[in-house]
Image (cartoon, rainbow, N blue to C red):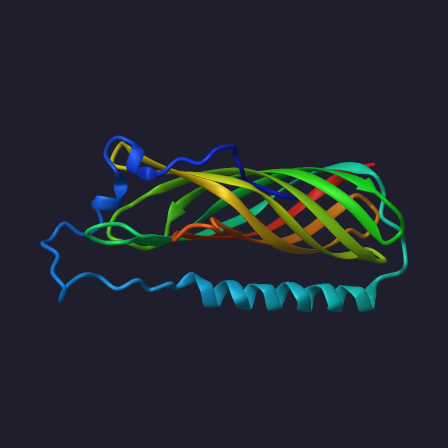
Length: 218
């Protein structure tokens, strides 16, 4: 299970051909400066509620089996929402694509495990005036609370994205936190929903969600 990060923090303003200036190339005045939409925040809150609902529904169906040590590999849908303040217009778009996760599970007891993980994804923009490709990676450290075969987890980590458009690249990266809910029936299969909130200490907002299906080797 899991996905995306990198180390270090680089502002797009330090790259050649800053993408933040290409969204709207018109004179900016007090009357026509684009407003920041912040579209992703309500969706992220809904996602958290869905994750909690999934956990409690799976908890009802859990048979009481304990988690096991092992290595997990999974793939599935990955989604990002970007809101990066810039002049003359904010970079504000969403993207979706393929996500891949690799994690190691270390069981503490029947109720808790520690899961360090690597996250990767390749995505295409879904909206915005410019077509973009997004490459993301990250490292996280997650703690999971288990009830039978279902778990609810919380994590922190470092995430990094490279946003490419018109042969130009914007790099952004910082720390973040997230929530995960999942189900592992004990036969090696993995079902995981993960939500991440990145760049908590800046004026930028990057939200991510991943639904992963995979296999764990015990």
